[in-house]
Amino acid sequence: MVVRYELVGVDLAGVRFAISPLNELVLSLRAWRDPGRYPVHLPWIRELHSVRDRLDGTTLNALVNNDLWVPDFLTPRPRSPLTRLDDELAVVAVTPAAVVDRDLRLVHPELPPALRGKRLLARILDALTEYWELCLAPHWPRMRALLEADVTYRGRQSAQHGLAAMFAGLSERVSMTGGVVEVRVRTDVHYTRSATGGVTLVPSMWTQGASTPISPEEPPMIMYRARGSGTLWETEPLPAPGALAGLLGAQRAGLLTRLGAPASSTELAVRLGVTTTAVNQHLRALRAAGLLVSARHGRSVLYRRTELADRLLDVSGR
Image 1 (tube, one colour):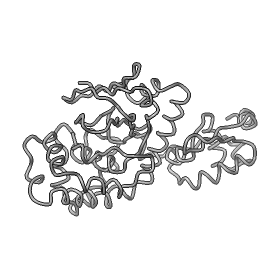
Image 2 (cartoon, helix red, strand yellow; image 1 turned 120 degrees about the vertical axis):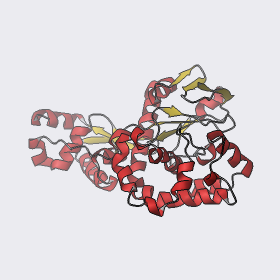
Image 3 (cartoon, rainbow, N blue to C red; image 1 turned 60 degrees about the vertical axis):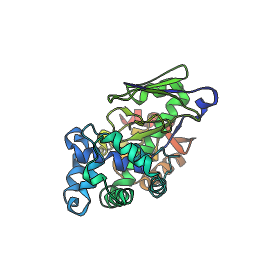
Image 4 (cartoon, rainbow, N blue to C red; image 1 turned 30 degrees about the vertical axis):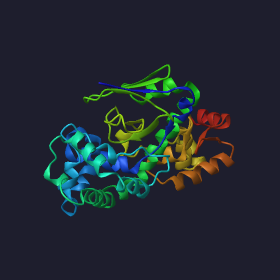
Protein backbone atom coordinates (compact mmCIF):
# COMPACT_ATOMS: atom_id res chain seq x y z
CA MET A 1 0.00 0.00 0.00
CA VAL A 2 1.04 3.62 -0.41
CA VAL A 3 1.09 6.81 1.64
CA ARG A 4 1.45 10.08 -0.29
CA TYR A 5 2.36 13.48 1.09
CA GLU A 6 1.63 16.46 -1.15
CA LEU A 7 4.09 19.34 -0.76
CA VAL A 8 3.06 22.68 -2.22
CA GLY A 9 5.12 25.88 -2.36
CA VAL A 10 6.53 26.75 1.05
CA ASP A 11 5.89 23.18 2.25
CA LEU A 12 9.04 22.17 0.35
CA ALA A 13 11.05 24.42 2.66
CA GLY A 14 9.44 22.65 5.62
CA VAL A 15 11.18 19.33 4.99
CA ARG A 16 13.22 18.83 8.13
CA PHE A 17 15.12 16.18 10.08
CA ALA A 18 14.57 15.30 13.71
CA ILE A 19 15.70 12.69 16.22
CA SER A 20 13.27 11.08 18.64
CA PRO A 21 14.45 9.20 21.74
CA LEU A 22 10.85 8.11 22.32
CA ASN A 23 10.48 6.70 18.81
CA GLU A 24 13.66 4.69 19.28
CA LEU A 25 12.49 3.52 22.69
CA VAL A 26 9.11 2.33 21.43
CA LEU A 27 10.32 0.90 18.12
CA SER A 28 13.05 -1.07 19.89
CA LEU A 29 10.23 -3.16 21.38
CA ARG A 30 10.01 -4.76 17.94
CA ALA A 31 13.34 -6.45 18.66
CA TRP A 32 12.06 -7.44 22.11
CA ARG A 33 9.03 -9.04 20.43
CA ASP A 34 10.87 -10.72 17.54
CA PRO A 35 14.68 -10.79 18.00
CA GLY A 36 15.15 -12.86 14.84
CA ARG A 37 14.24 -9.89 12.64
CA TYR A 38 16.97 -7.75 14.20
CA PRO A 39 20.13 -9.88 14.16
CA VAL A 40 22.43 -6.84 14.14
CA HIS A 41 21.08 -5.88 17.56
CA LEU A 42 21.61 -9.31 19.16
CA PRO A 43 24.49 -8.07 21.39
CA TRP A 44 22.10 -5.55 22.92
CA ILE A 45 19.17 -7.98 23.06
CA ARG A 46 21.30 -10.45 25.02
CA GLU A 47 21.89 -7.78 27.64
CA LEU A 48 18.15 -7.51 28.20
CA HIS A 49 17.95 -10.95 29.73
CA SER A 50 19.65 -9.76 32.90
CA VAL A 51 17.00 -7.06 33.54
CA ARG A 52 13.80 -8.48 32.03
CA ASP A 53 12.41 -9.63 35.37
CA ARG A 54 12.62 -6.02 36.61
CA LEU A 55 10.42 -4.69 33.80
CA ASP A 56 6.68 -4.72 33.10
CA GLY A 57 7.16 -7.12 30.23
CA THR A 58 3.45 -7.85 29.85
CA THR A 59 2.63 -4.22 29.07
CA LEU A 60 5.71 -3.68 26.92
CA ASN A 61 5.00 -6.77 24.80
CA ALA A 62 1.38 -5.73 24.32
CA LEU A 63 2.43 -2.44 22.71
CA VAL A 64 3.59 -4.34 19.58
CA ASN A 65 1.39 -6.62 17.50
CA ASN A 66 2.38 -9.62 15.38
CA ASP A 67 3.04 -7.36 12.38
CA LEU A 68 5.33 -5.23 14.59
CA TRP A 69 3.01 -2.22 14.50
CA VAL A 70 3.10 0.16 17.44
CA PRO A 71 0.43 2.76 18.35
CA ASP A 72 0.90 6.16 16.73
CA PHE A 73 0.42 8.17 19.92
CA LEU A 74 3.65 6.67 21.26
CA THR A 75 5.67 7.85 18.25
CA PRO A 76 4.84 11.57 18.07
CA ARG A 77 6.57 13.74 15.51
CA PRO A 78 9.78 15.10 17.08
CA ARG A 79 10.49 18.79 16.67
CA SER A 80 14.26 18.90 16.17
CA PRO A 81 17.50 16.89 16.19
CA LEU A 82 17.80 17.91 19.86
CA THR A 83 14.51 16.46 21.12
CA ARG A 84 14.63 15.26 24.75
CA LEU A 85 12.86 12.13 26.01
CA ASP A 86 11.29 13.96 28.95
CA ASP A 87 9.70 16.48 26.60
CA GLU A 88 8.26 13.74 24.41
CA LEU A 89 6.88 11.81 27.39
CA ALA A 90 5.21 15.00 28.59
CA VAL A 91 3.44 15.29 25.22
CA VAL A 92 2.25 11.68 25.36
CA ALA A 93 1.05 12.09 28.95
CA VAL A 94 -1.68 14.52 27.86
CA THR A 95 -2.94 12.40 24.94
CA PRO A 96 -6.76 12.33 25.02
CA ALA A 97 -8.19 8.98 26.12
CA ALA A 98 -10.13 8.69 22.84
CA VAL A 99 -6.90 8.97 20.83
CA VAL A 100 -5.15 6.39 23.00
CA ASP A 101 -8.06 3.98 22.51
CA ARG A 102 -8.23 4.64 18.76
CA ASP A 103 -4.52 4.06 18.20
CA LEU A 104 -4.38 0.95 20.37
CA ARG A 105 -7.32 -0.57 18.48
CA LEU A 106 -5.63 0.11 15.15
CA VAL A 107 -2.82 -2.11 16.44
CA HIS A 108 -5.04 -4.59 18.33
CA PRO A 109 -8.69 -4.75 17.16
CA GLU A 110 -9.25 -6.88 20.27
CA LEU A 111 -7.34 -5.24 23.11
CA PRO A 112 -5.21 -7.62 25.20
CA PRO A 113 -5.80 -7.54 28.99
CA ALA A 114 -2.60 -5.55 29.57
CA LEU A 115 -4.04 -2.66 27.57
CA ARG A 116 -7.31 -2.38 29.45
CA GLY A 117 -8.36 -0.92 32.76
CA LYS A 118 -7.79 2.22 34.76
CA ARG A 119 -4.65 4.39 34.60
CA LEU A 120 -3.77 2.72 31.30
CA LEU A 121 -1.75 5.62 29.89
CA ALA A 122 0.09 6.11 33.20
CA ARG A 123 0.95 2.39 33.32
CA ILE A 124 2.27 2.48 29.76
CA LEU A 125 4.45 5.50 30.50
CA ASP A 126 5.75 3.95 33.73
CA ALA A 127 6.69 0.76 31.87
CA LEU A 128 8.43 2.71 29.09
CA THR A 129 10.32 4.94 31.53
CA GLU A 130 11.67 1.94 33.42
CA TYR A 131 12.57 0.24 30.14
CA TRP A 132 14.47 3.35 29.03
CA GLU A 133 16.45 3.66 32.25
CA LEU A 134 17.53 0.02 32.32
CA CYS A 135 17.93 -0.85 28.64
CA LEU A 136 18.46 2.21 26.42
CA ALA A 137 19.82 5.05 28.55
CA PRO A 138 23.24 3.38 29.05
CA HIS A 139 23.65 3.12 25.25
CA TRP A 140 21.87 6.30 24.16
CA PRO A 141 25.01 8.47 23.62
CA ARG A 142 26.26 5.92 21.11
CA MET A 143 22.84 5.61 19.47
CA ARG A 144 22.30 9.36 19.28
CA ALA A 145 25.73 9.85 17.70
CA LEU A 146 24.81 7.41 14.94
CA LEU A 147 21.48 9.15 14.31
CA GLU A 148 23.11 12.60 14.27
CA ALA A 149 25.69 11.36 11.78
CA ASP A 150 22.88 10.20 9.50
CA VAL A 151 21.16 13.59 9.68
CA THR A 152 24.43 15.31 8.77
CA TYR A 153 24.86 13.02 5.76
CA ARG A 154 21.29 13.49 4.50
CA GLY A 155 21.51 17.26 4.85
CA ARG A 156 24.69 17.29 2.79
CA GLN A 157 23.09 15.03 0.18
CA SER A 158 20.07 17.34 -0.10
CA ALA A 159 22.27 20.42 -0.50
CA GLN A 160 24.43 18.80 -3.17
CA HIS A 161 21.90 16.77 -5.17
CA GLY A 162 18.44 18.11 -4.33
CA LEU A 163 15.40 16.93 -2.38
CA ALA A 164 14.35 14.21 -4.82
CA ALA A 165 17.75 12.51 -4.66
CA MET A 166 17.78 12.79 -0.87
CA PHE A 167 14.31 11.21 -0.56
CA ALA A 168 15.29 8.38 -2.92
CA GLY A 169 18.33 7.72 -0.75
CA LEU A 170 16.25 7.17 2.38
CA SER A 171 14.89 3.82 1.19
CA GLU A 172 13.90 2.03 -1.97
CA ARG A 173 10.33 2.48 -0.74
CA VAL A 174 10.51 6.29 -0.82
CA SER A 175 10.39 8.53 -3.88
CA MET A 176 9.56 12.11 -4.79
CA THR A 177 7.93 13.16 -8.05
CA GLY A 178 7.15 16.83 -8.44
CA GLY A 179 5.77 17.89 -5.10
CA VAL A 180 4.51 14.45 -4.04
CA VAL A 181 6.48 12.22 -1.68
CA GLU A 182 5.41 8.59 -1.91
CA VAL A 183 6.11 5.92 0.70
CA ARG A 184 5.32 2.31 -0.19
CA VAL A 185 4.47 0.43 2.97
CA ARG A 186 3.95 -3.28 3.58
CA THR A 187 0.97 -2.84 5.86
CA ASP A 188 -2.66 -2.30 4.89
CA VAL A 189 -2.41 1.50 4.94
CA HIS A 190 -3.34 3.76 2.04
CA TYR A 191 -3.96 7.50 2.10
CA THR A 192 -2.99 10.80 0.49
CA ARG A 193 -2.83 13.99 2.49
CA SER A 194 -1.52 17.51 2.25
CA ALA A 195 1.82 17.99 3.99
CA THR A 196 1.07 21.52 5.15
CA GLY A 197 4.15 22.78 6.96
CA GLY A 198 6.38 20.09 5.44
CA VAL A 199 7.44 16.55 6.29
CA THR A 200 9.59 15.48 9.23
CA LEU A 201 12.21 12.84 8.46
CA VAL A 202 13.28 10.70 11.39
CA PRO A 203 16.22 8.25 11.21
CA SER A 204 15.76 5.07 13.22
CA MET A 205 17.75 2.00 14.11
CA TRP A 206 14.61 -0.15 14.33
CA THR A 207 12.96 0.03 10.91
CA GLN A 208 13.89 -2.18 7.99
CA GLY A 209 13.05 0.33 5.27
CA ALA A 210 10.66 3.22 5.78
CA SER A 211 7.41 3.71 7.65
CA THR A 212 4.79 6.38 8.25
CA PRO A 213 2.01 6.90 10.81
CA ILE A 214 -0.89 4.48 10.43
CA SER A 215 -3.47 7.24 10.75
CA PRO A 216 -3.74 10.07 8.18
CA GLU A 217 -4.70 12.33 11.08
CA GLU A 218 -1.12 12.23 12.37
CA PRO A 219 1.38 14.91 11.21
CA PRO A 220 3.40 13.98 8.09
CA MET A 221 6.44 11.96 9.13
CA ILE A 222 8.70 9.35 7.55
CA MET A 223 10.87 7.09 9.67
CA TYR A 224 13.69 5.41 7.79
CA ARG A 225 16.66 3.18 8.54
CA ALA A 226 19.69 5.20 9.68
CA ARG A 227 22.99 4.68 7.91
CA GLY A 228 25.40 2.52 9.89
CA SER A 229 22.74 0.78 11.98
CA GLY A 230 24.21 -2.58 11.08
CA THR A 231 27.51 -1.68 12.70
CA LEU A 232 26.13 0.06 15.80
CA TRP A 233 27.56 -2.54 18.17
CA GLU A 234 30.85 -2.92 16.31
CA THR A 235 33.94 -0.77 16.18
CA GLU A 236 35.94 -0.29 13.00
CA PRO A 237 39.70 -0.69 12.99
CA LEU A 238 41.55 2.56 12.48
CA PRO A 239 44.07 2.06 9.65
CA ALA A 240 47.25 4.05 9.92
CA PRO A 241 50.19 3.99 7.46
CA GLY A 242 53.31 3.04 9.37
CA ALA A 243 55.46 5.98 8.34
CA LEU A 244 52.73 8.53 8.95
CA ALA A 245 51.80 6.94 12.28
CA GLY A 246 55.39 7.40 13.38
CA LEU A 247 55.16 11.08 12.56
CA LEU A 248 51.64 11.93 13.80
CA GLY A 249 50.71 9.05 16.07
CA ALA A 250 48.46 6.12 15.15
CA GLN A 251 45.16 7.81 16.08
CA ARG A 252 45.77 10.99 14.10
CA ALA A 253 47.22 9.18 11.11
CA GLY A 254 44.22 6.85 11.08
CA LEU A 255 41.78 9.75 11.19
CA LEU A 256 43.59 11.43 8.34
CA THR A 257 43.25 8.25 6.30
CA ARG A 258 39.50 8.19 6.96
CA LEU A 259 38.89 11.78 5.93
CA GLY A 260 39.13 11.50 2.18
CA ALA A 261 35.39 12.31 2.28
CA PRO A 262 33.98 14.94 4.66
CA ALA A 263 32.75 13.65 8.04
CA SER A 264 31.81 15.09 11.40
CA SER A 265 33.47 14.26 14.69
CA THR A 266 30.22 12.62 15.82
CA GLU A 267 30.12 10.33 12.79
CA LEU A 268 33.77 9.37 13.24
CA ALA A 269 33.29 8.67 16.94
CA VAL A 270 30.43 6.25 16.25
CA ARG A 271 32.29 4.43 13.51
CA LEU A 272 35.41 4.05 15.62
CA GLY A 273 33.77 3.35 18.98
CA VAL A 274 35.46 6.21 20.82
CA THR A 275 34.21 9.40 22.46
CA THR A 276 33.45 12.52 20.43
CA THR A 277 35.67 14.50 22.80
CA ALA A 278 38.69 12.34 21.98
CA VAL A 279 38.09 12.64 18.24
CA ASN A 280 37.70 16.41 18.47
CA GLN A 281 41.06 16.79 20.17
CA HIS A 282 42.81 14.98 17.34
CA LEU A 283 40.85 16.82 14.63
CA ARG A 284 41.71 20.23 16.07
CA ALA A 285 45.39 19.32 16.17
CA LEU A 286 45.35 18.11 12.56
CA ARG A 287 43.56 21.25 11.43
CA ALA A 288 46.06 23.47 13.26
CA ALA A 289 48.84 21.67 11.39
CA GLY A 290 47.21 22.44 8.04
CA LEU A 291 46.24 18.81 7.36
CA LEU A 292 42.46 19.29 7.64
CA VAL A 293 39.96 21.97 6.74
CA SER A 294 36.54 22.31 8.31
CA ALA A 295 33.22 23.82 7.31
CA ARG A 296 29.96 24.14 9.18
CA HIS A 297 27.02 22.23 7.72
CA GLY A 298 23.85 22.93 9.68
CA ARG A 299 24.57 22.02 13.29
CA SER A 300 27.62 19.94 12.43
CA VAL A 301 31.20 20.74 11.50
CA LEU A 302 32.56 18.60 8.67
CA TYR A 303 36.28 17.87 8.29
CA ARG A 304 38.24 16.76 5.22
CA ARG A 305 41.86 16.41 4.19
CA THR A 306 43.85 19.19 2.59
CA GLU A 307 46.10 18.78 -0.42
CA LEU A 308 49.07 18.72 1.94
CA ALA A 309 47.55 15.76 3.78
CA ASP A 310 46.91 13.97 0.49
CA ARG A 311 50.57 14.38 -0.46
CA LEU A 312 51.69 13.06 2.93
CA LEU A 313 49.49 9.99 2.52
CA ASP A 314 50.79 9.40 -1.02
CA VAL A 315 54.39 9.58 0.17
CA SER A 316 53.73 7.25 3.11
CA GLY A 317 52.00 4.72 0.87
CA ARG A 318 48.59 5.23 2.53
